[in-house]
Each structure stands twice: as structure tokens, then as C-alpha cells.
Length: 338
Image 1 (tube, helix red, strand yellow):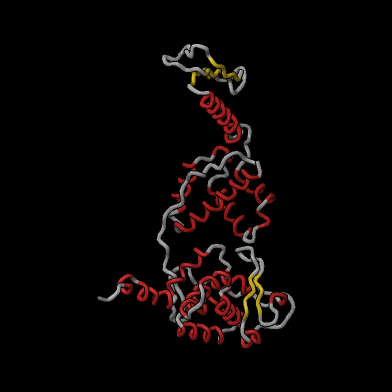
Image 2 (cartoon, one colour; image 1 turned 120 degrees about the vertical axis):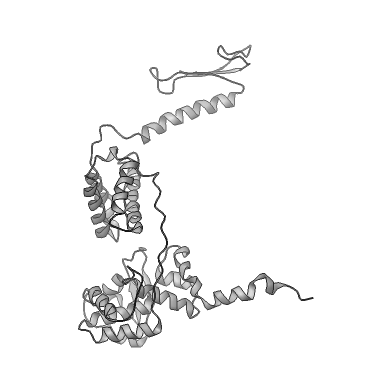
């Protein structure tokens, strides 16, 4: 029954005021809730009817299936098979998700609540930083949202949980003197690969893993082609003749895993950095000196492979021109002298 009819006298049985249009319908069928209501206009009646139908239809989509007893671990495996395999950081992300699943006791996924997650998060904060916990929440959110898009589940149980606020850590970078000291230490170490990888990262703004995993196919005519990047876009960065001559000539992968040798060499110097920034200090150093030397912020965005300019803007304050503009363009310098 989905009827809207006009009443001659404009009086609806349950109304004290005139309501010329009467709605009498059951959006869920004969056994569902019945709506009997009067309206001043036909448009109002139709809008109310359509609204109730929409609520009924959406409820079916968003209510978890009571018979779905798949555990979180099963959903992680499903997400990995249907989507996760295509991600560049899948090994790291999958390991994180499985560790979270184990720590939470591998619960039935549809029974997870916001409270379950916040309790887990509170326990994690005793061991790890706020940034790490926020990253874990991002991974879990992405998993649920992707499975919703794939019509595998109905709802993301932690969709309303906001990430924790944290103070952005100080960004460390090396001065020219510190760069010289570090390179000298690396040059004299046993691991020669760490020395060349460091120079490549300093020259191109690459992440350590991008530089360390280079193959012979990625070096061509004094250009390095970074592939399988975090931003999923290839980057082509030029290098000078001197650095090109130092890169080994051989088939396949050019360097061994040498991040440990780099960190040990850094520890042997007097260079002191904010906690947790050893692996990114070379990238920060490139970007900071690029801007201090007058580089363009849009060019830096392309070199670093940032999808959004907002990620690159944290280096903007290093630009001398940027600081000089404060003096040149402040309102006092725009006043016309008397």
C-alpha cells in the first residue's frame, strides 16, 4: 500500500488542521510499519514517502549480516587477495594488519566496535608513538573501506574514530659540514655501497629504499628512473657526470642492503638528529638545501614525488626568496610616503 490521495473536505482523521493530501503506506510491505499522515501539499507527501523508502533501502546496505561470522584475519586475507597485492608497501602493511589482528584476539569482524579499537589503541600507546598508532588506524580503515567498495562487508566499524592529535616532530637535516663528515666516514668504511647510495639520495631526494634497490635498467644517460615508488608514479631525476661514474656497472641490482652500515657510520659521527629520522635525513637534507639555494617548490614536488603540494610545503620556509618576500611585501612597505 503506497497511496497518496486528496480529501475533499481537507480533513485527515488524525489531524486537527486541514490536510488535503493523505499518505497511507507501508514501505516494508504488508507486515511492515504503516505510515498514515496528512500534508498540506502533494510535494510534501511525496518527499516524506520517498524519504521513508530511502531509509528502508539504506538500512539493508548498512546493517551487518548477523550470519557473517568471518573473523578479522579472514577479512585481512580476503583484502590481500582482492586488492592488497597491488600495493607497493604490501609486505609492511600486511605484517602490520596481521600483528594488529593477533593483538586484538582475531575477533569476529562484524562485532568489532569503536570501543574495541580505542581500547586496543590505548594499550598500544604504552609501547609505541602516537604516529605509529595513527598509521595502524589508517591501515585498518583502508582495509574496511576497500572491502565495502568490493561489496564484501556492509560497514566500517571504526569509521567514526578520529585519529589522535600529535605534535609534528622537528625535521632534521644535515649542514654542508655534517654532509662532508658523514661522507668521509662512509668512504672509509668497509661497506662501499652505503657511500654511493648516500650520495645518490643526497643528489636526487630519493628515499633510502628507492636508491638502495636500483638496478642497471634504471640508470640511463646520467638519469635515474625511480620505479615502484610510494606515490605509484615513476620519477626521472638527472645526476651529474661525477656521480654517474661512481655508480657500479653490472647487471641486475646494483647495491646490497646497506641501511645498517649507513646508520652505524652516522652514529660514529658527531651528527645528532631527532629520534627516528636517520633513514629520512638524506631526503630532508636534499629538499631543505634545494629550497635554500633558490629551488622552485613545484619542481621539488615533482622530484620528491609528492601527490599533493601540501606535503612539499613543509620545506617552503627554507627558501631565501620566501623570507625576503616578507620584508618586501609586508603592508608597511606598501605605504605611500607623505
